[in-house]
Length: 137
Image (tube, rainbow, N blue to C red):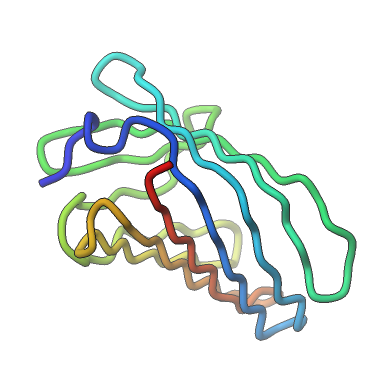
């Protein structure tokens, strides 16, 4: 089982987005930094988002990771619940409902220290998959 110490540090981030609804496929190249907040972590992501037919944009996001006994609970920067996952092997995380859109995630730690998060998002106006690969920097 991975711990906060295992995740802490800088990670190269490569993301591929496949949008089946709008066709706005894209990639993101950047960094994710997980830094200590006591026994927990803050996740900060920065990168360049390139969409199939659009401008290149700077992208950022932040989350709070609360590390418990065999479970990571992820919250948005404002403290609102997002999802949770078991930091071991390959396993689905919990789902997140945002309005009418359902976010499903699977984490894969089988090739540690490389790891992957795959999001599948479906709703009335969304239908995409986002695959994020993390490699130690």
